[in-house]
Length: 438
Ligand code: GUN
Ligand code: ZN
Image 1: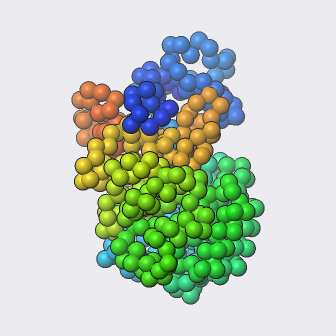
Image 2 (image 1 turned 45 degrees about the vertical axis):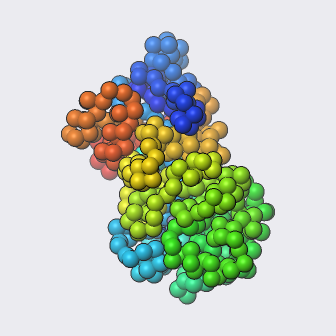
C-alpha cells in the first residue's frame, strides 16, 4: 500500500460531547496521513501538515467532504438480512414466524458464505467498518462471517448463537456442544488478525441452566473475549423470563449471577430495566446496545436515555437488522434522536456521532485501535457527502454550524451519504464505483 494523505474536513472525538465542547476535534481543512501499513501517521490542519508529508505520498482531495472514523454497529444479526422488514405482532411471534426459519438455512455453508459477502458489502456501503454481529447456532456461520471479514481486512466481532431450549429442534445445540463449538471458534478466530469472538447466548429464555453455566465457564476461561446477548427488550419476553427464573431479582440478574456482566459484554436493547439494573451495568462495565429502528419496528418500547445517562451506563447504537429496518448508522441516529425526544432528552448530533464512533470503540475497549483516527491507530474511516441528495444538499447548504450539518446528515442521510469507506487504509467501498471496491 502506498502512503496516502486525505484532505477533507475531519471530525473526531476525545470524549463524550456531554462533557463539553472540548470533547470534539474538528479541522475544517484537515489532512489525514495514512502510512503504508494502513495506520494513521498524522492528523491535523492541512496547512500545518502538508509540508511535513513524506515524498511519494499521494494526496487525495476530498475537500468538500467530511471524514469521520468508520461507524461501529454494536448489535446486528447478519443471517437476518434475509428477512429485514418482516412485520409481526411483537418479538416472540417474529422470532417464530421469520427468524428461526431464516436462520435454519445457515446450516448450508454456501448460503452462509453468500449472505456474509452481501452483508459485508452492505455494511461498508453504510460506512460501518466494525460490527458486533450475531451468527446462527451453526459454527460454520461464524467461519463464513469472520472469513469474509478477514478477506477484506476488517475489524469485526462475531459469535455462534447458543440455544438449547424453547426453540425449534432444527436450531438446537446442547450445553456441551455449545461449549465445545464456542471454545473451538475462540481458538480459531479470537485475535486472528483483526477478528474477535463473542460468546453468544441468544437470551436467557433459550438456554437451559446447564447451558448458561457453560457460558459462564467459557466467559471465565476467556476474560478478554466479548459476550453478547439480549435483555429487557419486550414485555412478554420479560414475563416469560420471570416464570423461568423466579428466584432472580430481575431478568438482568440472571446474567449478573453468572458473571456475564463485565467489560466487553454487550446487551441488546436494555429498554425495560430498573434503576438497580442500570447501576449494575454501569458498575460492571457492561455495555447497552440501543437499537431504535428495531424497537420501534417490533413495538418493543422506548429506550430511556435520561435514566441510562443518570446511571452512567455505556450507551452504544445497534441496527439490530433484521428486527431493525436499516443497516445505516445515520438512519439509526435518526430514530435514536426521536426516541430520546419522546423521553424528553435532546440528543445532540455530535453525541450521536460519538456513540457511533469513539463511544462504541471505548465501550468495546478497542479505542487503542479504532474510533479515534489518532496517530498510531488503524485507518478505518469514512468520507461523508452532505450533498448526497438534493434535499440533504439543500439543508446542509443552509447549516449555520457543524452541529447543524451533522444533524442534517443524521436525519436525511443513509448509505447515499457515504462517498467512500476505508479499512486499514484501503478503500473497501466507493459509492460511485460500479460493484464492490473489494
Ligand atoms: N431476542 C432473542 N433473539 C432475538 C433476535 O434475534 N432479535 C431480537 N431483536 N431480539 C431477540
Ligand atoms: Zn438482536
